[in-house]
Amino acid sequence: MRMKKSLEEMLHLQNQLNLKFQDGIGRHVASYDGTG
Image (cartoon, one colour):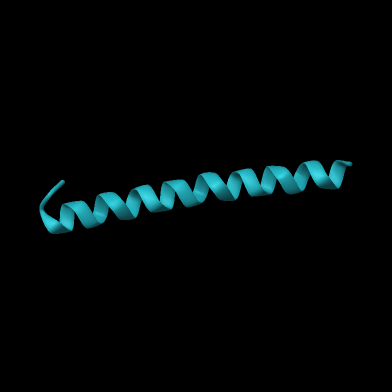
């Protein structure tokens, strides 16, 4: 039970990291294109 919980937490953290990463890339590309 404890293992399952920590696994879900890890997936949640990874999800947040991926979102931040994509957001950062999107912003970087926009500024590079001169649209942002």
